[in-house]
Image (cartoon, rainbow, N blue to C red; front, side, top):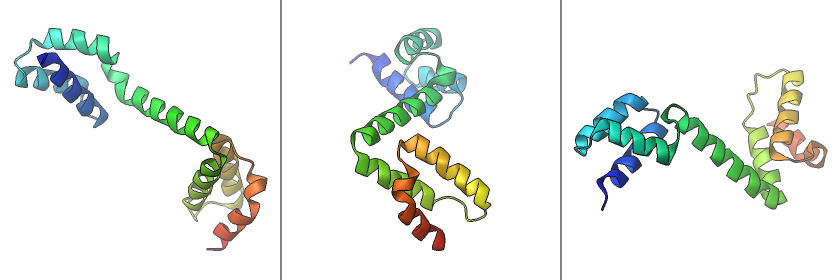
Length: 124
């Protein structure tokens, strides 16, 4: 197997874990006895800019989740209500309404359709 494949997988994991791209690249290149510049070149082709890899992967995950919720309105509603349930009880009523509105847009649901459930959550 190509030694770069394993090194690139380890580098991707390190970047997702929040490690410094340069330190991770140097450590992994040394561990696999690869020239750091060669690993960097392969990583840039395979993963794109290393500094933004973690953010780009998080955005892709959010997009996949949003697509799944759009396909399944029950999942969207349940996810929305779970997010509402996790809102801080320290929020003012206006802040709470604003957050519910923001979450409704994020989960692509009509908050009026979930009014009763939201009211039950508020009483807890």
